[in-house]
Amino acid sequence: MPGQKEILRLRVERMAPEGEAIARAEGSSRVVFVPYGAPGDLLEADVTTAKGTYARAQIRRVLEAGPDRVEPPCAIYFRPGAPGRFCGGCDWQHLSYEAQLREKRSLVEDCLRRIGKISGAQVRPTLASPYTWGYRNKVQIPFGLTDNGEIAAGFYSPQSHRIADFPACPVQPDLAVRLALKAKATARSRGWQVYDEKSGRGWLRHFFARTNAQGQALVALVARTADFSDRDTFVEEMREQEPSLVSIYLNVQPEKTSVVLGPRWIRLWGAPRIEEQVGKFSFSASPGAFLQVNTPAAEILYACAREALTEDAERFDRVLDLYCGVGTLAVWLASAADKIIGIEENSEAVQDAWANARRNGVKNARFASGRVETSLARVSRELSGACAAVVDPPRQGLLPGALRALTHPALERIVYVSCNPATFARDAGLLARAGYKLERVQPVDLFPQTSHVELVGLLRRKSRDF
Image 1 (tube, one colour):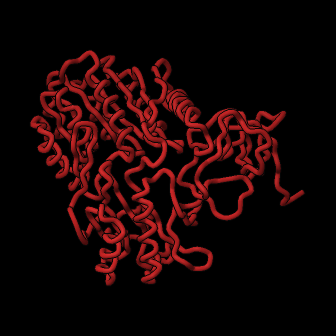
Image 2 (cartoon, rainbow, N blue to C red):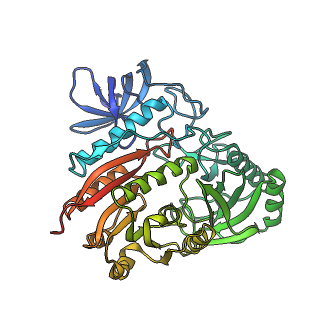
Image 3 (cartoon, helix red, strand yellow):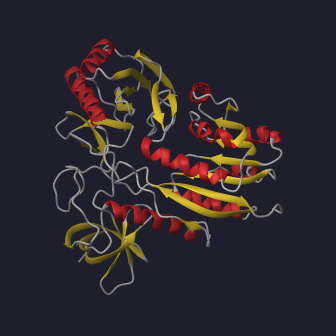
């Protein structure tokens, strides 16, 4: 009948690169994508979207749990039939950790085969994170309103900008959660006007926190304007809440955009940077600079990058560190090259990189501020002898200008660090057609309880005829 929901009995086969489960209805070849499914599940589900060859569905009931399904610890994680909003911050809490590691390797293999058209590259088993809960050192939490008009702070429900107000978050450290809840309480008591995405009005947009392994924190409010009459009250209340605070900032994002952070940081109190220990190295970072969100797992990632760079090569004459951030990889890899040249668009991160090189005794690295795509042409003139490149681009991967520059004949290998298997596979396929061979990929789990995975790919020059 028109308007009647289509209800299916589905058997889940595996997980898809976007994090959903891939299932099929009994007696049908049509693929059905189901969020929060687990391999082996038998589900009763409502079809939400139907296309010619596939459909999407929402779980109504778990008729038979697969062997990898576990009970998620988060109180506002999706549960079939549960009332109220649920959080979209994590999508794999319902999978055992062993299954998460296995499926992340499969996602990388799928992307290489389907997107990169690459066969023969070794994909190693996913390396586990030392901590699977409370591991995130950075959080950005949007503010909004509850149905009764009270200020809420939490993550968005899936496929929406409706906030699921949270009392706790198991993937964040307790320190970050306490600070977020205190900021929400202050916003409520002071009656701050929450930003409205549709009208572009209001003031308070997000809460930002960065924590470190020493139990310290840097926090910020993200607001539409720099006007902040309650500045002193906010600083006083946050410092009373947590003596471990090292900095309090206001970030100004005036644009009508979904981009969280604006270009202007106003320090309200405390140190200009927060420090972090990664392995034997010490780093400091400005509030807007990039650091990996899982510090213990980042040590594993950087060790994998070093292994890929130094395998069968004692030392390079030049190593390019592209999208170098605050210089973490440059410091880790410095002993493998006569000279390391880092390029980063964020000028404050470049200042941090110079300082981090000095504080760790690295004298053979230099850093330049600029877009990788335009700066590479200038830097490539310095490439001679045995050279390599290490790239760690944002999720969208390498732009055409960067890909062209990486075909420079002096570059013998590329170590590609990525947080997006799909764009990595695309770029690896393009580089393979430009004279490189993808030898192996090492997935590393920096994001437990989610479908996201970090990886390190090793590409070597196979031909100079491109």
